[in-house]
Length: 207
Length: 207
Image (cartoon, rainbow over all chains, first blue to last red; front, side, top):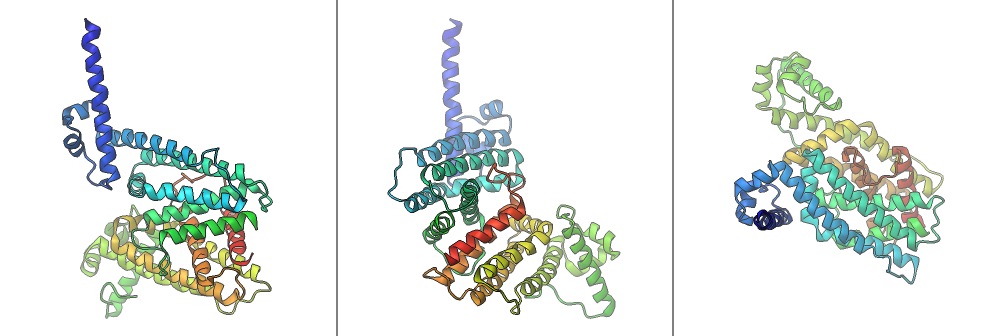
């Protein structure tokens, strides 16, 4: 009897958790980091403010749980981006495709990532979780290059793969966070920037 | 650069102004952006809190005046970094020296720039003033490359000079702002990173 009563409670509880996380994800995906509050999530999820507080204790802890759920999903997506089954006709094509896939991943989640970066500036725990995902996608990016670039011209290929990631990462990071104040007065479309990053990495790794 | 507040006319007033600006510069140069307050500046400059308020109205306006003074100085320094009198034996040497000079400028003022970037995140006016200095040093960097690289292999040299600046700028920006959470778990010394940025730009522009 006790079990029967408990089970639906747990199931309902799991469902509430999912609803809350889903509502938080929607808020953050819409770029509403500023509007991220227990009240807003309660209204969006239909779970009461009291229940949310009881489960998550504070807005800050709730944020960390939701960020973790989102980044676990993005980490999986990143792995799929750099599938081991991909094949290339040339090493140049491999370099370009690696850069393009990473850039596409970032562009797809631009708003979400921008909000998380902003949050990371004021919340060290959020920053650390974001950091882990950066390392994760970096390792996937570098492993993909290593798998497909068999004849890099750089004397220290591991360094060159690492540096390629840092360059692409840093330019994409700037693109997300520059707040309409880019470092150059020359207008550059996102796609044109990515194309140049492909050329930069190609020449750095293969010429 | 546009004047943010009126220039003081009386000699005593000029001296107080200078003392206040100097004290603010010292605070910011020591990485004490958090401790930037009218009280701290009054204590350091010997100018009364009342006089500072009378002249600058608020901590925010005082910050903008001091930031402007500092960046005017750094803009001049940047121009001197890329003197038209520099001569190089090879174009490779010219690329490396351009990157090295910019990196050295940033490393010299790392603490000051880090504080200004953090301030720019929450103060649009401060962000805009910092932005102007980024454009300024970018133009000096690109003009220097243009002066010395007569045979770039890129079909659009202006784009390649611009992209070289963006890459070096973005990596240095990350280095300043990464808060002990770099995008790679592979340790990379600042000098080693700059050396690689030289190689990246060399291969991008000349191979």
